[in-house]
Each structure stands twice: as structure tokens, then as C-alpha cells.
Image 1 (cartoon, rainbow, N blue to C red):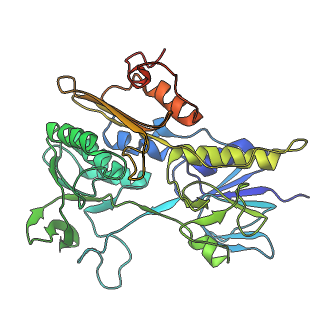
Image 2: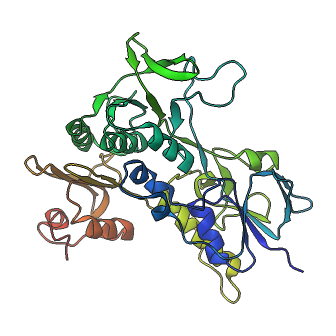
Image 3: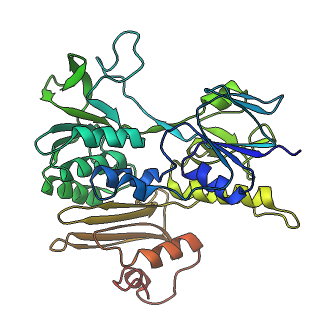
Length: 406
């Protein structure tokens, strides 16, 4: 009897892989909840969606709600926390990533491994439900981290009526994805919702009273009172299982163009995988990797197309009064060595919209749209195709027209 494919991790990448492989595939996921779309957790926290709305389609095959604790490569077996042992023909690691917990004084009591009451990461459905239960009108909430995750969490908490303070160590919000202009517009959007935003602000400690975090201390000594604290300080690939099994791990689990690890019987996809030196940590690459892997494993008469990387477009919707939509892709700033580069920016202060594209030679290499995404389809297609832009007098303005080139 042929051993089934076994997928460890019931997030977007793992569930998509199990759906595509079908049949007797075994999906091992440690969360008590059915698989869900983690990208939409902020919408659940904001109260826009019920948890069941963001559930992923149930894949065929068998699902185990337990934690995989060890991979026996010699016997091709996965040992689980509930005592079950699952034999595999092909093993797919889709273990995702863990929230980064900053080294704040007072965050963990000596010898403790669990966060104290009143402080949460923002990574799982349990995190989301706990925050929802603890947050309402008038509740003081501090969000530590001003990247995409922190901005989403701050907006969601404000929508629930909380008094939100957002603390960002960098000089501006979402500094890894946005240029200064679009970052400022996001800042203004949040302050318009009542969020108090502080940049260039480092947190050094939390104060615990009766087992719960009740204050946040900044590096300059200023202390903020808080009822709920959210840690949105980024994520790190979850590679412990792979490391313990002796697989090649750098930033993530190293895979080749067929998503194979250093063991030919084990593949890796999603947030935990490192392909060509890059860990994506985004939804689109996770889905593309899952599809490429499934195509490879299911191929019979033809050679599947190898996975060659993903050109990622990031989208974020900030709902609430005066909703704000954001899309960003590629390089937003010219490189120092660029000789032929054009940057076109269109801003409308009245409507709160901003569009920018960067063209190197005759190719679109990056862009950001904020507040009005009518042109995002045409821009994304031009960027992904890496083909020369139309040779006319106003190619850049054409790309930025409101009809998106339709």
C-alpha cells in the first residue's frame, strides 16, 4: 500500500496543497479551529466578518488536529503530540511562521513561557478572539509595531471603539513597503480614526500588575497605561521541526525550484520556505508555491513548470470611516546607479488619493496606489509581464488614468 502525502500546517499554503493533492492526503494542523485565511484576521477583529466567514474550503482526505512534534526521516513517519504516528510517502512542511516577541523587560516572568494576561501577539484566530473579547469602547489599547500588521491591528481596534496608541520604532509607518508620501497618508488615515501614532519610538518594558500587563514603558522613560497590548513586531519562519530533522535551514527551510528540501521525500511551501535566498511571508507566494508543488507531484506525462519565484503585489484595505485602499509592488525608489529612470506621481489632497510609478528604461519596475485602485489591474499586468511599455508620448500618464487602461 502506497503511503499518503502528509502536509504539516493547516494555513493557506498547507490547506491549498492538501486541496490540490486530494485523495488520501493527511493534513496535520495544531489549531483547534478549522483552516482559515490568516490575511483576514484583522477584519474579524474589526467586527466586519464572523470567524466562519474567513474559513478556507475543507480539503479532501484526513485532517488531524494535533501538533507534529518529530519527523523520522529514516522511517518516513511523523510523530504527533497526541501520540499518533503518520507514515508518509511525501511530506510537505507548511509550518508557517511565528510572531516575533520583542525582548521587553517584564514581558515574561522568570521561567515562564506564556505571555501574561492583557498582552497578545496578533497571529492566530485565538489571538484574534481573545483581543475581541477584551476590547470595546473606552478600552486603552497599545499596539507595538507600525508595519502592515500593526497598522491593520490598530485600525481594527479603533473600529471597535478602543482608545488606540500605535508605537513604531522606525521613522515612519510601513517603512518597508511604502514611500514617504504614502506612509504619511496612512498615518493621517489612522489619526483620523482617533489612533494616536508615535514614530521613532522604542519600547523597553511592560509593567505587570496582578499577572496582567497594565503599562508600557518607552525608552525615554514615558509610561503609557494600557488595558490591552498587541505585539505586531513581525514574524519569523517556523523551522524548528525541520532543523530537528536535520534538513538544510537558513532563514527558512531551503528548497529548490521543485520545492524540494535537502531530503528528496520532503517538500516545503509558504512562510517557512526559503527559495533562491528569499522567504516571502505573503499569501500570493504561498498559493503559487502550493500550486507549483501540487503540479509537480501530480504530473504524470508532462514535466511541470518549476517554481521560479513570485512577483508580489501587496494590498491592504483600511476600512471604517473614510476607508482607504492600498496597493504596492516592486521598487518605489530609483537606484543610485540608475541612468534612465522616470518617476511619475499624482496626488489629490481633496480625495486623499496618491499614485506613483517608477519606470526604468522602458519597463515598469514599481508603483504604489493609495485611496483609488482603479488602475491597479493595468499596472500589475505591466509590471508582472516585464515587457516594454507602449511607445507613445505619455505612457506613464496612460498607466495612471482612472480607467486603468480599460
